[in-house]
Amino acid sequence: MKTKPPTRKTRRGASRKGSLAIIGTLLLLSGGIRLVTEAGQVIASEESTQDTPNSSSQPVSLDLARPEHLTVALNAIKQREARLIERETEIDKRETALAAAEEAIDSELEKLELAEKSLRETISLAATAAEDDLSQLTAVYANMKPKQAAALFEKMDSTFAAGFLGRMASDSAARIMAGMTPEKAYEISVELAGRNADVPLE
View 1 (cartoon, rainbow, N blue to C red):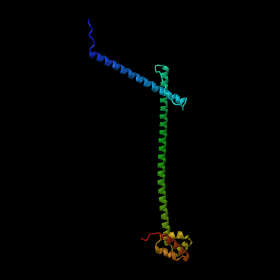
View 2 (cartoon, rainbow, N blue to C red):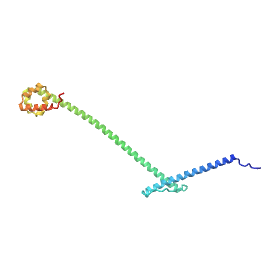
View 3 (cartoon, helix red, strand yellow):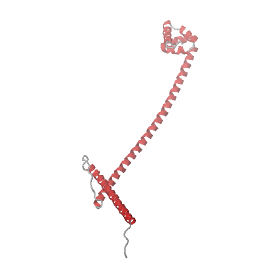
View 4 (cartoon, rainbow, N blue to C red):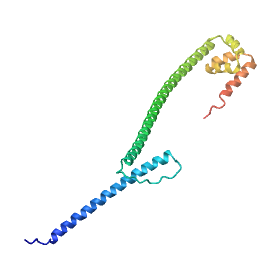
């Protein structure tokens, strides 16, 4: 019985299968070479860091079919991973410390704002109390007999006396100043005039 010669269709199918097999083999070889090269670079960088930090790293060829070379590559990768984990842990610690510091600063700022508010309220109360005291004392001097009040104002500092007289009604202040010596009345008048010198006329 005679065998039929291979047809063109059969030869074409066989050719395609052969091409696919060659391409697959090339891809596998390329992947293996890349893996070997990367592992060699990892080990080279590890050795250059630990042994000679200033020397330039050279690619190292590894035969991953040999167990000792595969173990070296895996150890180098594990060491790199351990350093990365340690670095991430350190960053997390710094971020935690920074967050705690910011929280403490915010708390202190809040305390300062409360203290400032309390101080403003205290100053306001003190100023109000002082104004009330001055108003009351001015009323006392204004209601005294002019001769008695004049005797008190005669002993006062001129600036201090001018402050009280300037708060009084003009007729009360005039009666008190009329009972003073001309020299004292003049000094107080100068003080009162100086206070109003910078007041705009228009």
